[in-house]
Image (cartoon, rainbow, N blue to C red):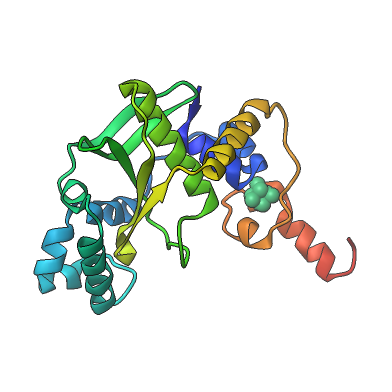
Length: 218
Ligand code: SF4
């Protein structure tokens, strides 16, 4: 049984998952908690300019209101996202378990809150894997199909509905297989952007390798 977070990490970089398993987990920093909390204050943030000015958002108040206002108009599940039936709900499926930040009972589905920046469209690949893991866990518990999930980027005022397409489900299965097969340090990913954002880059040795490359020693 894998944690939702582990299959997400496996999709990002199997080696990163290997390091994470060797490391004691710390609680998320306050900054992360404060951003996540924004996802439970949407109506207040839309209505109260002072509250929005004081909130830890990553875009201008105008951008935030515009984006969130558009989501409110577009999403039929808005009421459920604003006032979810469950919050921080632990789900256990056939292969994965973990916490769904929001649970919506009407046409049951889950929403996960991400504190980083969204891509221009859709969701980042590892986050898609985590969303499928959470949705499949709910489907397993309820014995009912779950065909969509929501990804929220509250600091950016962005909410996206994500369909559980065949491609997304296949990526999830691949990540489950990868997470289950790790028994030693896997190969590094060849992706500078991923490594630059990885908290294990020192341990992994990518900075050393990059420096050597710059000096012509690699
Ligand atoms: S630094 Fe790069 S290769 Fe190493 S674990 Fe992190 S993402 Fe993977």
